[in-house]
Image (cartoon, rainbow, N blue to C red; front, side):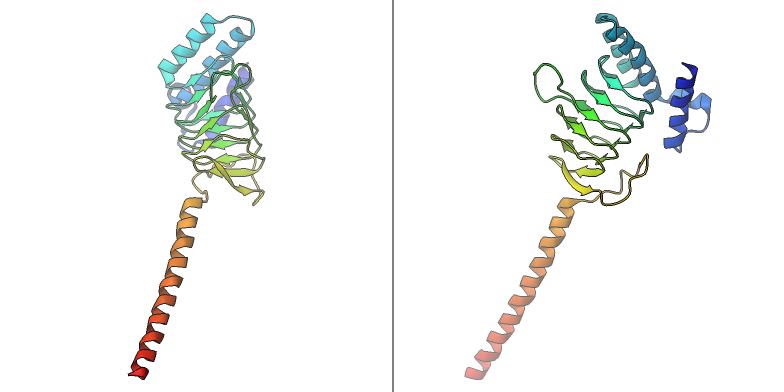
Length: 222
C-alpha cells in the first residue's frame, strides 16, 4: 500500500512542475485525494456494497470537485491536474499513466445498460474541457485536444481535435511514454480558413489581371 501511495506522489512530481514538496502534494492536490478516495470506494463497490461507496464518491466530489463513480476502473499512474469539473462514469476504464486536465468528462451517450463509458488506453492525455462520450476505446499514446468532443474510437498514437472529434495526426511522430504537450496541436479549422484565404487572394489577382486586359483592349478599340 505504501509503495502505491509513494508512486502516486511521484507521478505528481513527474508531471506537474509546480509541485514543490511532498507536504504540498499531500495537502493541496485534489486529484490525488480523489484517486485515493476512489480506491476505497471501488474496493467496497466490488464487494457488492452500493450506498457506502456512492457516499464516499459524493464526499470526494464535495471535497475535490472531481466525480468518479465507484465502479470506474483506474490503472496506475493516473494524474488529474487541477481537476475541477472532471467526471468519470461507472463503466469507464482508464489505463496506465493517463493524464486528465480540468473539465474532462468520460461519459455515456444515453440510458443503455452495460458498458456505456469509454476505455482510455495507456499514456493518453485528455486536455482541458474535452468530452469523451460512448463505449469505445481511445488507443494508447493518443492525445485529445482541449474542448474536443470525441464520439467514436480513436486509433493508437493519434491526436484528436474538434467537435465532433477528428483524428488529425496518426503515427506522425514518435510518441514519448508520457507526452504532456497538449497545447501543441494542429487546428483543422484554422488550416481550412487559411486555405480559403489563399484561394480568394488568387481569384482576386486573376480578376484584377482580366480587368487590366479588358481595359487595354477597350483603349485599343477606341
